[in-house]
Length: 113
Length: 115
Image (cartoon, rainbow over all chains, first blue to last red; front, side):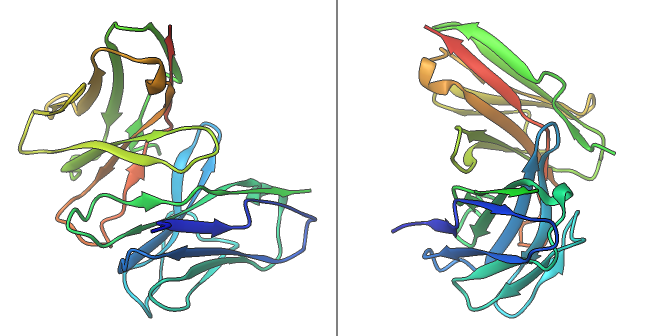
C-alpha cells in the first residue's frame, strides 16, 4: 500500500513553460485535493475533486487546471508557469471512515525561474 | 484574511518537558479542528482532532484543548521527545463531514525538542 504518491519530486521550469504534476492514491478514496505550501502561508487549497468526474476550485485556483482522470489519479497542470507559482505542492485524499483524516503525498517542489 | 492563525513561528523546549502550541481562529462557523505534523521533505500527517462539542481530546502524549468563547485551541505534548521536532499545523473546517468541507490551515509552528 503506497498511499498517496506524487511525481515528480522536484522540477525546475522557466517562465512560460507548462507541466503537469501527477498524483495517485491506492486507498480507494473518493475525494482528492491539491494544496500549495509557501513560507509563512500554511497550506492553501488550489482545487479539489469530491468524486470521480467532478472538480471544484479552492482558495487559490488561478493559473492552474486539474483533471480527475479516474478514481485513483488527480493531476494538476500549469499551462504557463510564473515565478509566483514557485512552491511545494501537496496532493491529498480522503474517503475512509474518518472523513477528516486527509492523507498527504510527499510533495513536489517546483521552482519557476 | 487569515482565518486560522498560529502566531508563534517557532518553539523550543527541553526533552521531557511540556510543549504547548497555540492556534486562534476567527470564523465562528468552524466546528471541527485538527492538528497535523510535518517532517521536512514529507507530507503532513494527521495527529489529533477535536469537535466543537468537546473542550478536550486526548491521545497518548497529545492533548488538544478548545476554548470556543476565546476562539482558541492548543496542543499539549507531554512529555516532549526529540522525535516530536517538526512543523505543526492547526486546521479548521465548518464540519459536518464530506469532501466539500475544506480544511483551512494555519501557517504552522516549528517545534524543536532539545535532548
